[in-house]
Image (cartoon, rainbow, N blue to C red; front, side):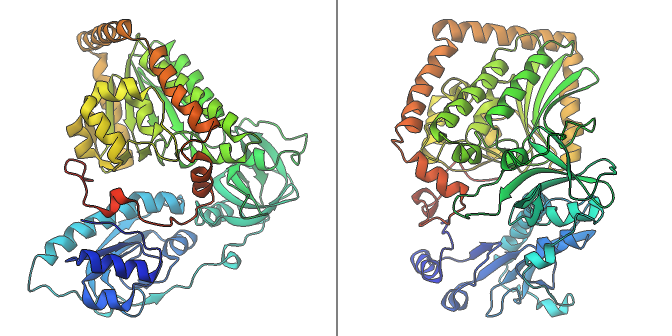
Length: 533
């Protein structure tokens, strides 16, 4: 198997000639497949819409129009976009409360796509199978590219309608609007409490989010992007973008606002929830997580669960906040030391059983962060990227926790080969201990049952004794300070001396620049033992 980024027609054709494959698979392709390619090789496009749906903004329209069901189709590439014969399709329900486009894409759409691929591969091995023309299966609906005129709203509209419009554009491109006299792109929207303030006025703020009055109700906006220089503007917490423009009367309301990092108790289990937008854990969020963990450790619960919200679990430090800082290196340093404090707190929690749950995808420091827990579990189907890029060596105490879990040889391979790992392989490696249901709600129930096992006093005491014995053995030989000092010594050179191109890599990531080439590790055959499940 080989992977090629679809940068342009010539690079796609060159890659096809080199590989001469049995199948070319194009997941959610935005560009037209070159005629030379689809005429010579079986080329199947995974389209994020049901059979008959055509157009580049399928998910945007599905969320905007409040569809109650949607789908994914595997169709063969032909001259006309999304018009080829169908190899496989799946449908799934959509909730009444609108999902964000990114949550829809990374959740049920991705699950349906993988199911379609499994069916496609089975059919490909069947010599007499022929894909079905789409017009034989469903009526064709051609949807145009959604533009800002389609997304526009007025603050006098109902809050629910505004939230739906913004979620249909989240995480890109956002919706243009004006808040406190500042032209912005809006993201990360939630319905707020009823208000009697003039529509469009900022009436409150909390944890980086602002509350804006609507025609009926109000809207929480967690993140904005200034509508200015596209090369310099980045998506940031709303209060950061509106700094200096918020009215002095803007106060924290009784309404809790969007989730973010918080602690909640359920029965005899304490949950520390990292509900971070796009999985980015800023310095402030790390400090909140540290406070929540310390609070959890003081409670009389039997277990503490560290988990994510409805999106990614965690992707490590907050690159957008770092890029926007007056001194990016200093902010990066503050962020990495703050996330290390969270890791240390988790490792050293000796009074309760600790469980870390990969409730969503995770990458880099977000994979390493929870490895200090007593039990690490994952939701079936999540993907872990347990390696560092962006010109960073990495920290999060991983030089202690990763080898302790998977062994020194596997730890080196994971960090050097830089390939994604699925849940089945993660369990085989020892990166996770157990795998729960794919459905997020079912996973939450399963996770609570796992945590409540430790009501059993014998099991709890045995687990805690083992933890203390291991820590005393390991840390008497080499304390955590020594692991962290070595990691941070490397990171200091990465962040302050820019020895591995951290500045350029971070900027390219934040500005979503297309890669100039396909990484060698992806272009080559995937290494044995590190295949996505």
